[in-house]
Length: 374
Image (cartoon, rainbow, N blue to C red):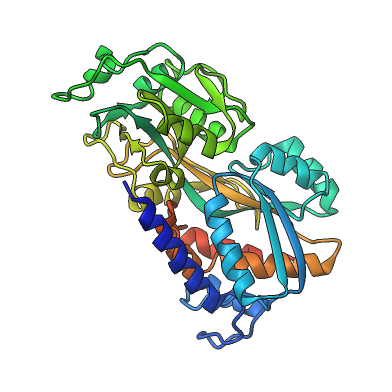
């Protein structure tokens, strides 16, 4: 588990690195700034310079999963580009999509790609197709706070039974069977879930449904269908667990260290329980299949994977944009900021903030798609 100090250091490092690249006109690949720079970055070069700085304001809203990453990226971009103002309101994926389709914000953050109805509404709002662009890989930790327990193993079946209220104490035989030799207390299990509509909830229930269909029978959704006590946003569930002996929740990796929580290793059936790290989560994203077409980069993850060393509970948090903005200046601004966000320098600092950097093959597609925004 990373410490809060590591997150702070990572934020400083990311800010510094991004300040060097966010609006630089020099490009080690020899290309010009703007769409040419984006094209150079898409080939996997290390410069990944952003498009020219814009003057004006961008507004985004949505996913709390990407909050810490996007706020660091915004701070760095604005440090280098003093005439740019970027606001991001982390209200949850559902709220962000509604604001985007209602033409209240310029881009949305969402932990799941647009559904058919949402995509149609977004196309109407944009006057063009909307694209799902994966900007951050956000591993979902099964985070807990149990006095005296710092090394816990769970599998999908037991996790499902905990989160739907079937397993209610920490020394339940189902839990002890996965933790041979551990001293587990009779402390009641206190489940906390996201009370707001959340892409994190949808991704976590996707995992439970895919990997333990007999124990988790409800359909995956942004709205929680299991048991427990609801708290708003990732910060709410994480702080609730931190304050509760016996508490457990699902939350993004970036919130774990901030709240000094422990994370369960996941027994996927591969033979060795998998610890959440940037490398183990990155393997899951690298194996994801693109289900969108062209520059719509929506991905399908294999939550039931048994591939050794692969952490299965991962979300890809998207920024949802218009492919062609009615206001060309907005398109230029979106392109500039997202090119910087997807660059090597930004992505390389994400693990210290509690995220898994995009695998190169995904990052390359994102930079190409961002370069096509107009």
